[in-house]
Amino acid sequence: MEAEQKPVPVMIVGVDDSEHSFYALEWTLDHFLTPSAPNSPFKLIVVHSKPSPTSAIGFAGPGAADVFPFVDADLKKIAARVVERAKELCHSKSVDDVSVEIVEGDARNVLCEAVERHHATILVVGSHGYGAIKRAVLGSVSDYVTHHAHCTVMIVKKPKTKH
Image (cartoon, rainbow, N blue to C red):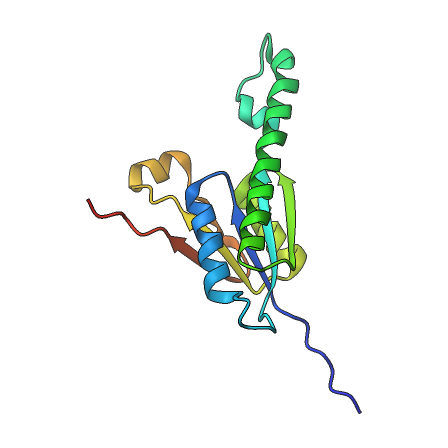
């Protein structure tokens, strides 16, 4: 009688085009997915949320339809650059067994839905380090997923540089 293989837990790392998210990815690779551990404790999925062109434009009126294709093309280029950089970082850390997804939508919802879709055990996000006012105005993805993702959430903060 063979022992049943337990499924490998899924770890999702959310990335955007900020240094904070890449710091979080690098920190995660260094602490959880080191090549010295041949049997990785997690299946890694990197998720990038691409804003929709309409949300990026932020207005609907004369001229919006003319701008839409250019904004859409630019958002696709940014998304491609972000996932390519994430793949390169993983490869540089000898982590090649990684899935990368680009999902259109608000990062808060995209990450929570990815957790559900992949039955993730842990979600990792970076912290931009906003103060209370900026967080209230811009909204905090890390704050939202902490309250709404149905898994453990780890927020990786980039250390402040000392002057």
